[in-house]
Image 1 (cartoon, one colour):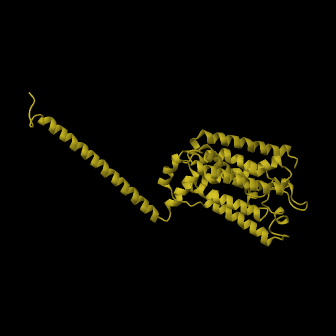
Image 2: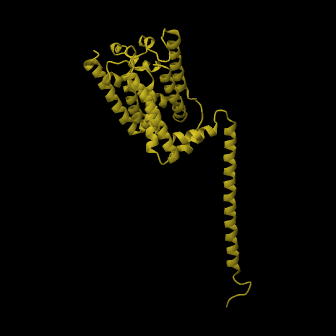
Image 3: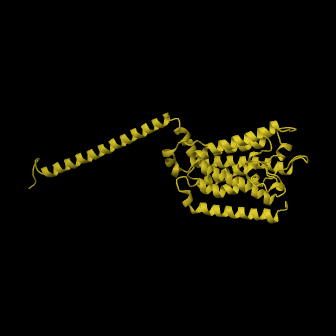
Length: 315
């Protein structure tokens, strides 16, 4: 016999109890979500007040430099300590050397430097290859205003954000790998020409960044990805145009300069630079791609040394 209004009491009470428990769980979840949001707001508030952690800048940098999968990790630990000192110091050194040769050394004009830089102890010259520091120090000397302005704009505009994300040690590794690759490639493919400029290092940064954008195109916002690729292409075309002019169309009394460093620096960036810049949240030394790139780079260096000692027309 079915009971009346009082019938089924235990079931009703159990249902009511379950409903109360469910409401308590929902209430607790809402409270936890509110607390998490408040904590996030507090963290953002503290970050905005912290002069060493401008979150808006880091957000912009993360969108331009990193695929979406690692942006959150970067933003959680982003800071400017240490600041991007490597690129800044290199740029100051290059500018100081340019001013020295433009102002204190005799020049017919300082828009395009010729006679002064040819006597510099920094420039790479085939007949002085035994002075091994020249394979690196040539990056400090530039052929004119257009040359140094182009390199400074490119390496500061790209190098500082890269250094904010990857820090100076990794960026310095890529930059110097491009510089050395540039001088060695010039000694092989253009063995009788002098070499000046930081284009090898600059192209290494661009090559590494270009490969990251290309590989992670979908994650780096397609519209931005297209813009980035177009910017890189425009810069490369204009800079290579100037380099080709300096190499093939310079007046007879001028100083033709090799352009092989641009290409070699780009390849160094697309190999070593790509592996370094794609390992933001990973141990670089545990990545087999990094050691593969290093092995290929060292093989090229050994071949270049052998060529310069035994096979170079400049001997």
